[in-house]
Image 1 (tube, rainbow, N blue to C red):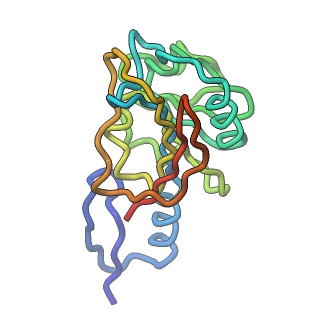
Image 2 (image 1 turned 30 degrees about the horizontal axis):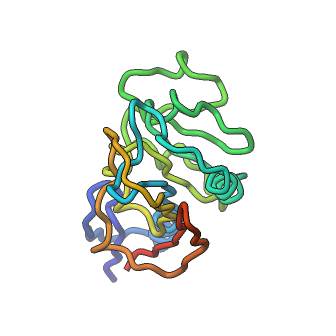
Length: 187
């Protein structure tokens, strides 16, 4: 019997003969554990000059509540901006920084293909939390997106990619005059 599994970083289905069911199950679980969490403005801006161009305490509290105890994956620029967040494991994707240049509590990989080797199979979710290049490379891996839409047009230099073809809205978590938080699932 032929078994199938997702080629995680190529975004296409590959067929493999003779693979054990356990391997397929583990890879499927890995895919389902990736979730993106992002805040963007109406014009898709997520950052300006390596910083978030707004400060919304309710959104930061939601981010903390959702990610506490889980694994965060971020690019080097995002890490330089936010640093290590307590109560969460952090993996930084960087072509320029090495493990010795970053805190000992942080794991560093130089490309996304090495990411799955660092993620323990302990049931924790993996939250992709920026920046723009990391979102572009990992959105296909994610089963969910937690999106905060800041209800304003903002100038910026980092943008969240278009995702509406692959995900559908399943829940509106909060909606007020300043922002809206929604959850999307992969179709």
